[in-house]
Each structure stands twice: as C-alpha cells, then as structure tokens.
Length: 201
Image (cartoon, rainbow, N blue to C red):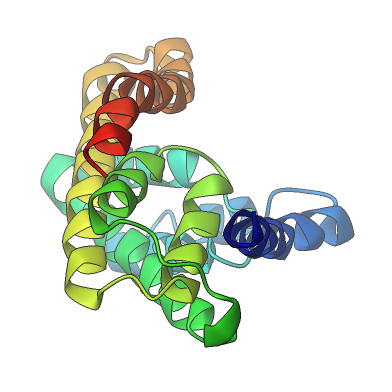
C-alpha cells in the first residue's frame, strides 16, 4: 500500500507541473513563436524542437507541433527535429525526477516500466509525468533511453507521416484528427500487453 501511495504522489506532482502553467497563461504556448519563424526553415526547426523540449514543463501541444514540423520541413527533417525535441524533454523530466527523495521512490519491474515509457508518448501530460516518475523511481538510464528513443521515434514518424499524407493534399481535418487517435491506440496496446507483463512479474 505504501509503495502505491508513493508512486501516486510522484504522478500527481508530475501532472501538476505542466497543468499549472496552462491555468496561468490561459492558452497553449508555442503557437505564436512557431508562426513567427515560418519564413526561415532552420529557425522553424529550432523553435519546434525547443517547444517540444519545453513540453515537460509547459502545456505544449506536441502532436500539433510535430505535425507542423513535418508539414514545414518535410518527412525526414521534420521527424528528426521532432524526435530530438521529444528526447530532450524526456531527459529533462527524467533528471528532474531524480531530485525526488530516494527513500520515497518505488521500485518498479523494469519490464513494466519500459512498456509504460514506450506507450505513454502519445498521451498528453501523462507522457511527461511518466518521464519524471521514471527518474523518481530510479529506472536504469539505459532502459529509459532505449524506451524513450523507440517511443519518440514511432510518435515522430507517425506525426510527420500524417503531415506528409494529409496536409500535402490540403486535408486539414484528417491531419488534426489522426494525432487524437494515437493516445487511444496506446491505451488499447496497454490493455492488451500490460496484463502479460504484470503476470510475468
């Protein structure tokens, strides 16, 4: 019971970090900064990656920023910038989580945490919370990096492929709807795979 309470505390604190700025600002940060750099591809790429890195502390709509990077820079360059920004944000969150007192941290099975980190990427707020929780729970750095790299890679490719497929043909509606389906797919994957890992551990 105590382990569950400790883990719950970590998750609640991590969730409050991106939510509080949204309540203060009153809008989704990033849109104005990104639109101002649209004429310069290099500046657009740097701004987009920077916004995704800041997603760990600000309510940046990562799905929209990633889609915009794919639309503006093309599939490969957009996916690379998206991946780098997401990785930077995850690493910041992981490092921040290590500041959580070790005596309050809960040790989780590595296999379960690997899957949670991998599948959490498309889920707004929860992905950032998981990165911080992974650091607080002392998840091995190599395992965290590998899970993040794979999860962020799949997410970045999906967003930029979405931009290339739909926005190139001026199908704005499907391009905006597709990212909203990714959290549902992640949840379904967890429902299917999660119990298997729980039984193994």
